[in-house]
Length: 102
Image (cartoon, rainbow, N blue to C red; front, side, top):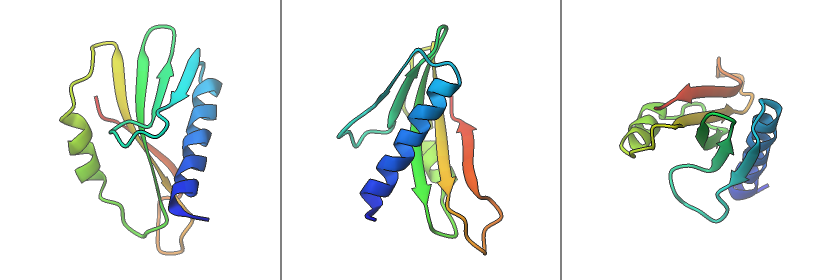
């Protein structure tokens, strides 16, 4: 499985999870190489989610968070970074780690 198809699968998982959390409409930013990959619209706010999936032992979350914080969002939007850590014997974190950026 290529990295691109692996990441696409994780974006689809995030989309389904947003609907489970009560989103009215969720859209992947298809073909976009921007900062946010998934847009989720809830009754009172909008959530912009950057999805990262890694099989590596270490992922530089701080660098990604600084990049996302540099982008200005409307006051009704929340920016989040969701990182998927594949199971690895050397890693404490496994599964989704969600961080609010703004």
